[in-house]
Image 1 (tube, rainbow, N blue to C red):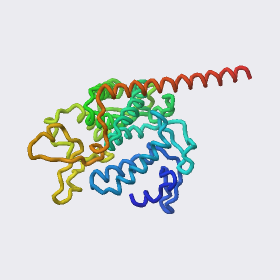
Image 2 (cartoon, helix red, strand yellow):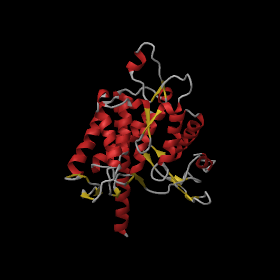
Image 3 (tube, rainbow, N blue to C red):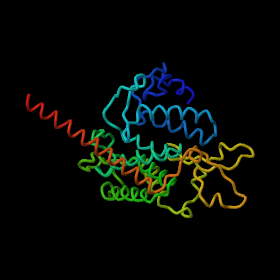
Image 4 (tube, rainbow, N blue to C red):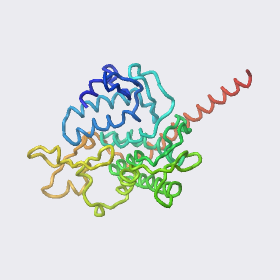
Length: 320
């Protein structure tokens, strides 16, 4: 982690995606939040959550500010060159960036988490699943879907933080699509192409260890779980690490989320293990609905503009 931090671009605070393991030089300088860099950003924040080391939070905050300044474009995210962050490097998003709203929740930026999650949900509604890559007008760039967990992971964290029933409905739709399109006699088959819903002859291990785990935790009542998940931080592979690992002597017990009954119990005190408690501003269900509606309106205007551009280009070609 220390070495990677030193490799950031000192002006933009952005990271690339591929390093030469011998020289440490960047081989690919595209900067985004998806494949190739997602876990680094995740562990910057979760190292702080687990260990309580403020230096990891400071690093994450620097990266987060850079990502939201250069990569975030309204509800969309556009990969840029880490040295020249005003230059876009590709015209599509990949499915792995769907973890970001969950990380935004843990940081406490719930409003922007709601916005990005809504953008992703519109892609899911259009194609039933998140394609492995999709363009900024939500067309399929790469149609495969191996039943990845990132979108439902973010849905889980948004529900845990807000208790907004909208996210139960989102999870229900995901579960219904899984049952309708990928359930097979011997398990659940990955989708070869979301446009045809043809199957791969495979089922990745993360379907059971992550995707179904998050779905189960969304719908399970607290008493149905074998332990309290708020006493743990989940790794990028959805393994549970106890927050007690980073506990200091005489430290107040830490939790991922603090429920109302936690703070009302006499002589029991907790503090947030993540920045959520200090940073987040209340996001009521009606406000979250307004954010989602605004996001839908922004996306529709973007798509209208894109259709007009495409129509203009087609007419110019016809004249030529």
